[in-house]
Every structure is written in C-alpha cells, then in structure tokens.
Amino acid sequence: MEMRFYRDVIHVGLQDGTIKKCERQVTYELQPKCVYKNNTVLPIHYKADFVITYADGSVIVWDVKGLADAVAKIKKKMFHYRYPDIDYRWISESKIDGGWLDYKELEAKRKQRKKAKKKEKK
Image (cartoon, rainbow, N blue to C red; front, side, top):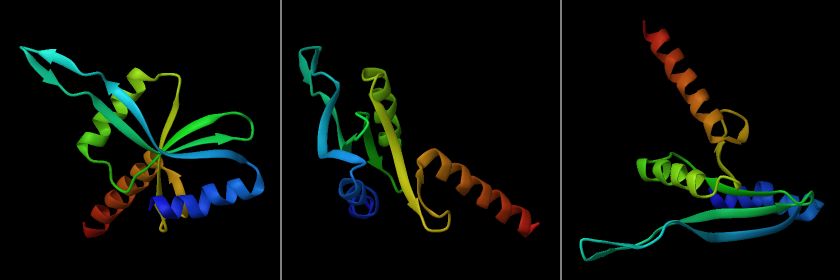
C-alpha cells in the first residue's frame, strides 16, 4: 500500500512540483529509555512511512494504514503528545470510496456500510 501511495500521490507531486522533498522511514522517539527497579526499559520509537515537504513549505508526516491495530493507535497518541506541532496524519486507500482518503474518513465510511448492511438484513 505504501508503494501505491508513493506512485499515486508522492511521485505525481514530485513531478508537478507540489512536493519538494520526500523522506522515508524517519524515526521519532516517543519515549526515551529509562531505568525501572534497576532494569533498563528500552525507548519506544515510531518510524514514519513518509515525511513530505510541500512546495509551500508545509511538512506532513504520513502513515499509510490498511487497518490500525491497538499498538498503532497508542503510538499515534504518543506521537501527538510528544510532537504536538508536527502535522501527523494517517491515510488509506479504498477503491469503494474513491481512492486515497484520511483514515478517520475511511473509518466513518466503513461504519456507515456496516450499519447499512445490518439494516438490510432486518
């Protein structure tokens, strides 16, 4: 899915000039290492799928998601806490819903479909 996002969105933006720079797999520290009862607790890191710098100077950290698991949701919360000034977004692809869209929007559309399906069964 990351390859398709690069092909469909990033590559096109680099070609037309709307994207100036794209970095992959940039690591952010969410929690530093610490010592707890004489045991070292390793740091918690998050590796961004893409960090994109746009022509207008804005920077967005993109994470391409199919389905977010519990660990991803926790790391997203930690990222927002640790880096409140960084624009961090999840994006997903859904052919049913017309292509690339914000993950929250996809979740809402999935919920609507599930609700409609339940209604049909009744």
